[in-house]
Image (cartoon, rainbow, N blue to C red):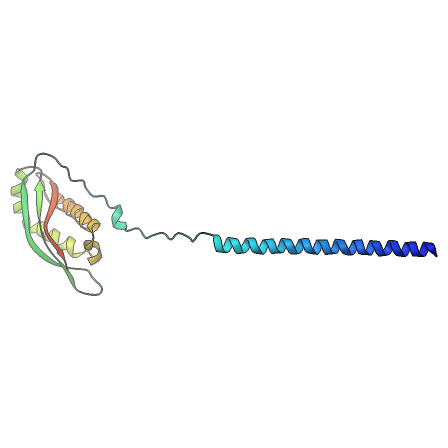
Length: 172
């Protein structure tokens, strides 16, 4: 009988120890789950906002010729006032302008004056195919100058255009 009581006491102690181990495992598991929840919440609330990339204007990639600050100024030819309707979706817009062309040689002035109808036609076509947004900012105007230099140089045979200077330019 004493052996029975001793076995019973050993069984009770092992049950209490087994129950204690189960409680310990449950407490540790709950602590781990709690730590994971807190860590996830901290990550969610403390992470930095994603940086939004700005759209890059494709006009910024257009090469623009650098105006040389040479001591010698070439011969000038003035393009008198022109008015051109430009592309616009919402309202009617137009450009009113005039500019001066700097040439690299004196001999080219006569040729440029003879080809003035071709030059004015090129100006009207190039400006007329621009949008209000393109001509409203500085980069768009620089791009227009570069395109005008390239187009006018394609006509001239005795010399080249060094630079274009807008003397009047209104976008409305």
